[in-house]
Image (cartoon, rainbow, N blue to C red; front, side, top):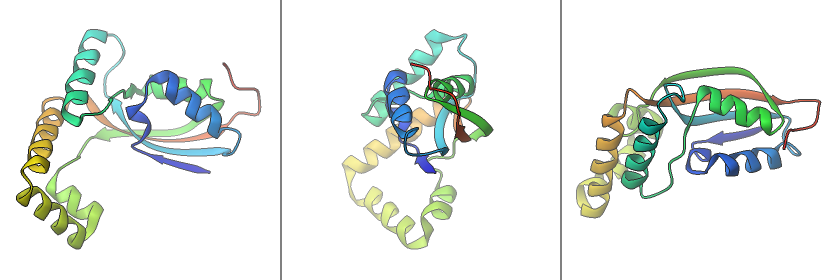
Amino acid sequence: AAIIEASLSHYSTKEKRAILKGLSTHADELLLHEICFRCDDSSLKELNHIKQDMSRALAIGFHPLTVDGWTNVLHEAGYEVKRSETGPMKVLNPVTVLQDEGPKRAAKIAWNIATDASIRSRVVETRRAIKSHQHDLGYILIRAVANNGPALN
């Protein structure tokens, strides 16, 4: 099994497909925790606006998929989704940071934000972008298993 957490959303769909297809020769089961659009693909213009805004805020490529998009890219890489779950993003929420990182690490993060203007600026901008798109972005958890048949190209 392979666990992928918040790393594929920075790659294009083509790159995601290649990474997942490469994993299919080594991992018969995948557990993914990624960012997803909480809407369908019908509003492509709005999705592109969100991608651009988030890419600018994060200073890195931002290419999440819809639930159907994640399902399709996994299928094309030779996996079948057995279970998925979605929910709201809680990134940079102080309570979530404390739960995820623990008190010692959360205190270090808070100290770094408080004492480094460039970090503080990036965190504020990232939080602003996430908050402005909070209804359109969320997380997706997926458990997928390798198909017995050949992967699609």
